[in-house]
Structure formats: C-alpha cells, structure tokens
Image (cartoon, rainbow, N blue to C red; front, side, top):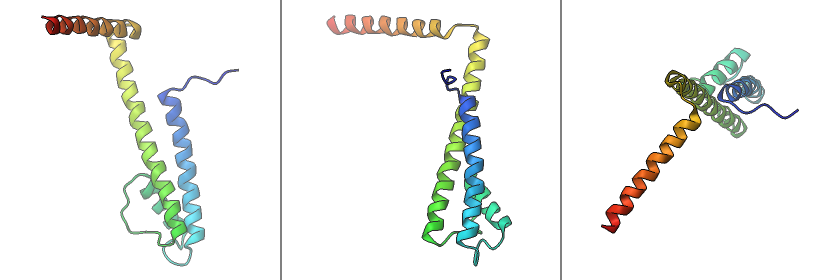
Length: 130
C-alpha cells in the first residue's frame, strides 16, 4: 500500500510527536549530564526543556557542559521546526478555507493566472517591438 500523501496536518502530527520525544529525551539527558549543578531534579530538566523547545529561553537554567550544549542545540532546532510546521499548517488551513469560499477549482485558478501571464508577456513583446 503506498504511503498517504503528505499534508500540513500530517506533518504537524509527526513533528509534534518528534518534538515531544525530543523534549522528554532532552530533559532526561540533561538530568544525566548535569545532575550535580543546574539540573538536580527532573522537574528542572523538564522546565528547561519546555522553555528551550518553545524558544522562550528564560536563561534561569543553562547547560555549561559541551555535551549539554549539543543537546540544547538539538532541542532548539526541534522547537524551531515545530513552530514552522505549525505555522505552515495554520496558513494552509486559511488558504484552503479561502479557496473553498471562492468555490473554484485550484486548476482553474492556475490556468487563469497562466492566461494573465501570457497576455502580459504579449503586451510586453508589443511594447518592445514598437
């Protein structure tokens, strides 16, 4: 059976799952790496991971170990990807809603735009040759 076509909603579900997994894994790894200083409780580790993945970053907990900084980088990039995909999903929903309100087939819209482009190119050709 072929895989289902990619949609913004499916991408959002996948990235949300990955984000949650990275947040929890990042918190656990930070707890293991820096248990003596900053991340002495699992609560602090989860708090750090949550504020890092959401890109808030209060700065109250900061990894100082190079391995911890690499974990932080993964958590940060995952958080940025999550925000980007969620934004894309919301934008796609708005675009789809507007398309439905217009009651037009996307293929018709594309053909109409191509016709406008061709007419404009013909006008430009006439202007140049005149």
